Length: 351
Length: 127
Image (cartoon, rainbow over all chains, first blue to last red; front, top):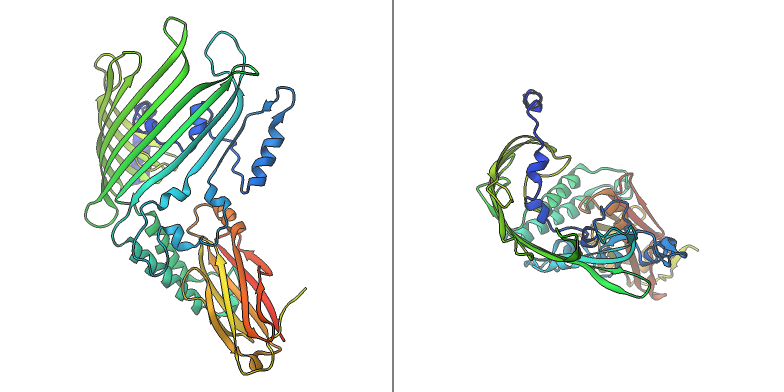
């Protein structure tokens, strides 16, 4: 049945990517703020496992002629560099140990990610095609996470069940990594499910800063930005049904913007938005509003829309949306079609 | 060089401690002559000062300590490979003729194809 629906609807595909333009996803907290800031796609990014790999990567990318690095981008989470003895499953899951009953709301801080971009790129929109030396750095973190009251108890029990099941297997199986034990496998699946559960509340922050080397001696601020979002997930009944409430904001500053007059000047824009979404397994229904305030006196623009989404498969959604888009004048849109999400989740604000 | 520990021939209990470092789910088991003599009590995989037998009884036996680690919770395979590289373990035997002796790493660590399961192992000859 799903296949028939898919084939029928394939004839009605509209460029839903248009719908996705300037929606809350654009305000998503980037995983690598340093790349977003300098318009670099986070592809071919190195993720060094150890500090030595980072230093080696820098050395390999250094261009003697220009005395600067050739587009070296890397992101890393220092937590993965550290082998502190305190690293264990319990700290990873956000509490102190097998007898602890309280989730640490700041446990997400340890997964703070750092991104660095060192490149040569023309980021000044003048008529001179000359690359600048660019150094960009950014960080992203989850400041506060509040989980369900039962989280610690449930995950502790599931983990202990895994442990006890593993201790029951024969020596031959225990010492063989290729031996699959179905009982412990069931428990680890439960642990994973609990880890993936949406928290009650989460607050994420990211920031980035980029400087340009205009010539060999002058380094000047090029761009900076800050992103934040907060989400509340209210369980609705049983299973994975939630009322999701999102609030998000972004500030971006560019010291080198091409003005309508043709001159180069500074610009800044502040976006703030919110979204309410009812998430019922495959079906979701919601509305969002985004307000944009630019530094150039363009006034406040807004986008207000309602949408519905149904997940046919993990990466295939039927979506419909209606609302008013950004623009100096009223700009109503209505869209209906299929979105090939390619692994993305339902339409939702960034986590 | 093979790991050895001089337990002696006394009647006292030999004590084993194991400290495992990983964010995966870990379970540790110590065996002598195919019989379990010690095991962890939670998913840290640690063993805290557990008696493994009278020195005279386990003298000239081989103590094998294995830690089975499930990395399924650690995201995708790339993340699991990173965590696999971070797995550490140290072992302390005490109360024998050698007194307290530290073995600061395992002999070997193996994994399955997709790095979801790893097993770290050390073999100690008790003399």
